[in-house]
Amino acid sequence: MDSSALAATVLVNPEILGGIPCFAGTRVPVQALLDHLEKNATLDQFLEGFPSVTRQQAISYLELSKNHLLECVSS
Image (cartoon, rainbow, N blue to C red; front, top):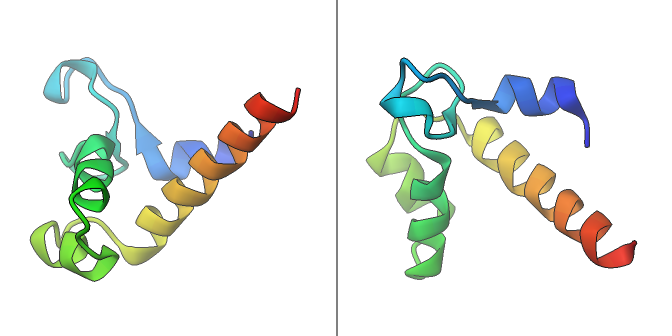
């Protein structure tokens, strides 16, 4: 996994929401994106509800997650 891309996308800090993984520079948990997608919301709907998250951050998170999952099932 590309650690620099991950660091630019996700932040885990015990001082922010008790260490829950959030989009870097925000207080928006990455789980919020997954929850929205699970409920059939679009990426645009998520971004409208969380304007502090950039489209690039959301796409980067999804790409990193996809790549990690594919690595896990391929090995």
